[in-house]
Length: 631
Image (tube, rainbow, N blue to C red; front, side, top):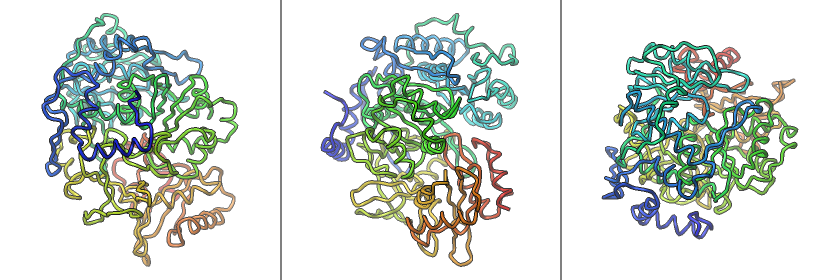
C-alpha cells in the first residue's frame, strides 16, 4: 500500500484528520522511523513565548533513518549521484551502503579532530558529494552543522562562524562553477584571521589549486579519511536537540541564524518530499538547489534520503557549457522529478528552444518550482516545453524558517493553478489576517499570511537571539506565526503568494501586490524579469517603480515603457501602471534567487548612499550599475 496521498478525496480526509487531531496524525507518521526511545508526548507549544517541542523525550539519530534503516533492503541502490561542473568529468555514485561507510569514516575524522556533541561546525564547500557526507557526519556525531554557501565573501563567512562560535571549518582548496574557480581555501584563510573559535580546518582537494596549509590547524580531507575507521555508532540525540543552523538574510541586513531541531524536521521533510513530488520507488529525483540553502538541506539531502530515494547533486550552473545543460542531464540520467527555481526557468526560456529541442525529456513525470512565486508566462513555458503538457507542476511555498514545503499542490493529485501555490499540506493551518491581526474569513480575500498552529519542522529560535526570533515571527499578530508574506485566497480556497507584505504598495488607497504587476510586465515578449517597489509620490502617496531586465536591448526605451504599461493596464488596471521604468542588466539577488527589494526601495527613494549589507548578494556589482543608471 502506498504511503502517499493518491487522490483529492484522500487529501481532504487526511487534511481533516491532521487538523482535528494533529498529535495523533503526526504520531502515526513518526512511527515508521527508527527510535532508540519513543516520545512521552507528541506536542507542547506556546506561541506567546514562543516555545515548542515535538516528540518530547524521544531519542534517535536522524542519520540512522537516512542511512542505516535502508541498508537491509536498499543497500545497493544509489543514494546520491553526483554530476560534475565539467560534462567531461566522470560522475560519481554512492549506494546507501557506500554512503553509510563514508559518513561513518568522516564521523571518525570529526571526532579525531576534536569535534563533540553540541559543537557547531561550519561547512564552506562546493557542491560535491563530500558536502552531503560532511552534513550527515555532523548529524551522526551530534554536532550542529552550519552550511555557508560557497559564494559568500570572507567577511560573510567569518560573521557566520563567529555568530555560532564554530570550532571546525570544513572547506575545499577551491570550487568549480561554470568557467570560474572559486578560491575557497584562500577566502577561508582570510575569514579565519578573525575567527578565534576555529581550532581545525579540514580541506578537501577539489581543484588542485595552490593553497597555504597552516600546520596544527589545517588538515587534508583525504589524508584524514585514509586512517579513519568505517564503523561509527551514531550519537543518540533528543528529539529537540539542534540539528542545524542556517543563516538567512534579515531586513536589517544582519543575517539570522535559523535553528532547526531533529525529530520534527525529520518527520516533516520525509512526509512533504514523498507527497508533494509523489515520489515512488525507482524515481530519479533532481533538485538543482545548493546545499548552502534550506532547499538543499531539506530536498537534496534529508528528505530524499529519509524516503530511500536516489537524489542527484549537480556541481555546475544551468548555462555551462551552454544553456542545454539541465536538459542534457535530465536525458542522460532519466530524471523523473525535477525541482528548480523560476529564475532559472526564465533565464533558460530566454536562451531559446534550440537548447531544449535536442534532448529527450520523456523521463520526466513531475516538475517543481521553489524560491519565489512563478509568473504565469514562465509556468506555461515550463509546462509546454519542458513537461510537454504531461507533467504536473508543483509550485511550492515555504521558507528557511518553516523547514519544509507548506503550501503546494501534490503532483497529479490535487489541482494546480498557474502562479498559485494552491492548498496547504496536511497539518498546515494557514490563515489570512488584516493589519490589526483579525482573521479574514471566507474566499476571494487577501491579507497577511500567518500560520496558526505549529507543524513539526518549524524553526525553534534564532541562534543566540530568541528575543529577535519572537519579535520577527510572533509579535506582529497574537498567537500566530507571521510569514512576512501577503497572500490571496481564491474562490476555491487556493492560496497565491503576493509577495512580502512590505512589497505591497498602497497607491491612491489601493493595495497593489508587486507580484501581480511583475507577472503582467513579464508577459511582454522582450521582458525577461521585473522587480517592482514603491516610492514616495506627491499625488498618489506611493508610486510604482519598475526595474526591468530585457531579453535584448530596446531600440526605443520610451516606446517599450508604453507597451509594458499597456500590458499592466490590461492585466491589472490603470492604477497599477508604473510611474517609472528603469531598464537594468541584473537585479540584486541573494544566492538563492531572492530579490533584495530593500536595496531597490532605497535606490528608488534616492537613498542609495545607505544600502546596508550587500555582501550576501549573488553579484554585488549589479547594485552600483543600478545606482548609476538611476541618477
